[in-house]
Image (tube, rainbow, N blue to C red):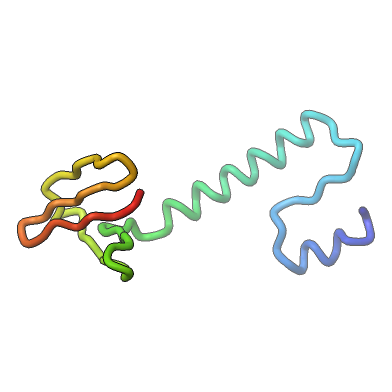
Length: 89
């Protein structure tokens, strides 16, 4: 609805589409969103770790620590040099 357009831009929306939407207009908005999120992803520092829940707490595991992972039906065992962490994944 037109009455919400200004409010949307105050909330920093990427685009504003009014019905009926032509395919070209939709494609332009979709490409704009795709480019925006790709830039956001490139600007964010890459994480070199994951968090998994094990023994009712979150465990931070560096990718460099992981030797291998083993599938255990609904669980995964993650092996490092120092420990074996079993998590539900």
